[in-house]
Image (tube, rainbow, N blue to C red):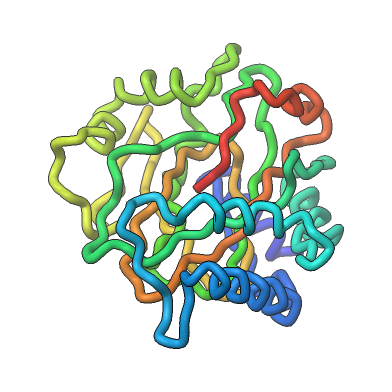
Length: 269
């Protein structure tokens, strides 16, 4: 299948690929309506639209707790279906399994007046595993359409190909090592000028091509991302909340090692 081959090639070179319309729009709309209902109960969504957040990272704890519990309730559809997992396995070439706690909602209220690429909170959700090879994939999908500058996760395409040594390298150490590269040192610099266009993010690290990609798309589209890709949360300069869903899908061969709650596995923004 030519399309699968193209997606595999993109995963290998860029660390991320998008499959359009993979999920049922009707099923995703069920999930969307439930989230809107809970947001209304917490006065975050009214007839006049979404409340704007006064903080960078989102919403009050009661709402966060409500939507975190929602994804594992009988009310909420399981969007990480067997058919989606099959696509992930076809792309990776071996079995994967959803990592606890499974599917997770990514929610950001509109807050930013202007939009720019952050210099902080860049991280990976899985450590480099060295000789154990690629850890697996992470999927992102859209509960609501996400437009450019609407809070979609930012990822550094190509970053999965760096520092795959024989040692395990966790997120904090990885960033320290990446700072030796001018591309990342500049990106992480708190005093750098704001980057307001992704056209200005192409560069190289370790003699490999890098660029920042914003995860935007329509309901039902799914991104599959190598778990080694560096990424961060982004400002939401739109008028609507950013509603996305993610799930980590490590290879079955290495998944059991990372079920330990003390393992360095983070929730992707």
